[in-house]
Image 1 (tube, one colour):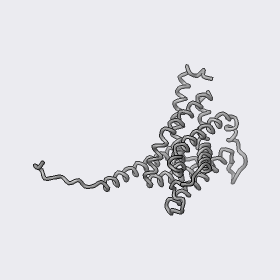
Image 2: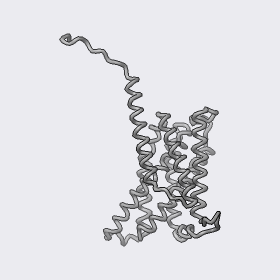
Image 3: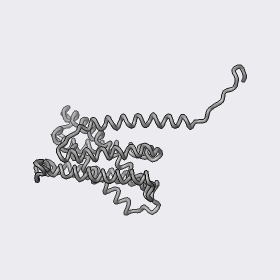
Image 4: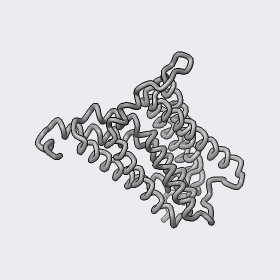
Length: 251
């Protein structure tokens, strides 16, 4: 199983896959942050860890089902001359779910319709398991392409599994800080939800064969986030009290 340890190419594949999983995990962290912040503060860390842990298990199970994953690219039927495969159906379904979820969260945040994104005091085990399940399901959608890519990049299943475990560990380490930052800055939350709308749209488009490089999406995310960080800094500066200095020459 670990005969690849002495193979430099296997280590290169491990590093490449780990980086790929971390980059593709950005979407997952944003989605997880929005969901977890709906829980009471004392339940957020547990929900976050369980959600990511369950997502890691589903991703590894998806990876171990290599034959099934590869068969998802076989056409099931056609719509207007476009062949639709199992992979396409998963992308379309996941994209529509993401569009609905993000749009609902934006509406609630803007209108304050009783579910304005604030934690519910009555949120219990039902909400906990619902959020964990949603995280796991959307992780399958997000990781489908990365798993198929991993099969092409690495020859050893153990390399792929280790890459997934390392990337999820990084996500667990970063998710709490990101969640607290988003929770304390409502404008960042709306921006994150807008990213999810964009990602959902791209998933649906890709399901219908219209491929758009995710590099453009990540560039747009980074640029928008950079502009918003400047806005936050300017607003903070405007709130800071003006300090008066005494005349020169006086102690």
